[in-house]
Amino acid sequence: MRPVVGVVVVALATLLVNACKDTAAPPAVTTTTDVRVDRRVELVSILQRLTGHQAYTTAPMTPYVAAIDRTFGAFVDHPAVAATRALRASHSISWDAPIVLAVHLDDQLELVNPDELPSIDARFTGADVASYAAQLRAFAADTRLDAFLAAQRPYIEQVEARMRAIIDAENAVAWFDTFFGAKAKARYRVIPGLLAGHRNFGARARLPDGTLELYQVLGMTAADGLPAATTDSIALLVHEMAHSYINPVLHTQRAALEAPGSKLFALVEKQMRAQAYGDWTTLANESVVRALVVIYLRDRKGEVAALAELRAQEQLGFRWTTPLVTELRRYQAARTRYASFDAFVPELVATFERLAAQP
Image 1 (cartoon, rainbow, N blue to C red):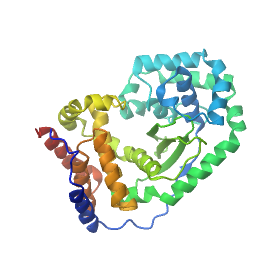
Image 2: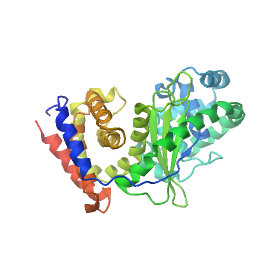
Image 3: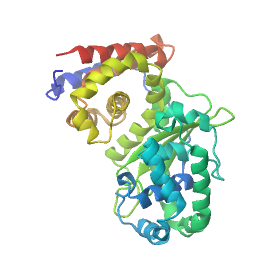
Image 4: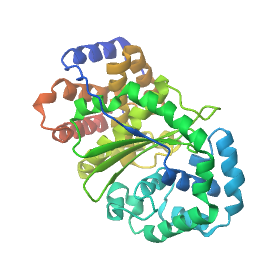
């Protein structure tokens, strides 16, 4: 495949501007998004940290992180830690999978709608999540997790207030509602991941009443452990929100995407695996999500931010970001032509097929 790293910046800028002219401006929508540190996410993150998993050991050594190590380090031999290691060994439940599991727990750490887990992430197929949830409950009780979080409440409230101000000012959900159409019975939750460091995760869970909860777990990278409103942090938020839209839709086209997706993955496999992206399905999801972030930044932050994001993605190995931006802009400019984004996805599949067929 011909690399597109040398794309002509002026041409892309022209594409973005012209497409934007045909796109209705997002309406003034005020959408509330729940922002809170999540006990379930912190619980699975602590266990992953105790196993030494790299996705949960890169957070700056803030007073909170230091307190985690002091308080929970004594429980490194707890059965829940062994169960965490065993689940990783048997079903690769690591990286984002613990977060997916966490959001399928209620306040008592009982499983909620666990049958949908394998449809969200194939790694859960055959996994004994009920037994693991019991281990989570035992660990929370034995370590007095709730007492620890209560003692950390001043810091947690500071993080939540800072993050809430950023989210409310950005109002990204309004843009997504305009681009994809508003989701019925959807609730958005932004979760500061206090142990996630440079990792960020998107997850979703369907409640028994049909409500779809969409989670964006954003890691804390600053030395003071507080979120900051930067272009990078906004891009990360949008990236994780986009997964909630893109992953389920592309999953419906898995059979059609497998051949072109596998070929594209083979071209950049080494670079993808270095980023913990181990298969073609992840590559396909990430490719479309990253193109969508470029469009968001163009609409909300301007051409300079969008072009910088595009160049960054090309350098990370996502060579086809430009043609995907072109296709998504085409959909955006003709939004009324499609009943939903699902109706457009076969055309997106055709784009992947063309990309894979290039020499």
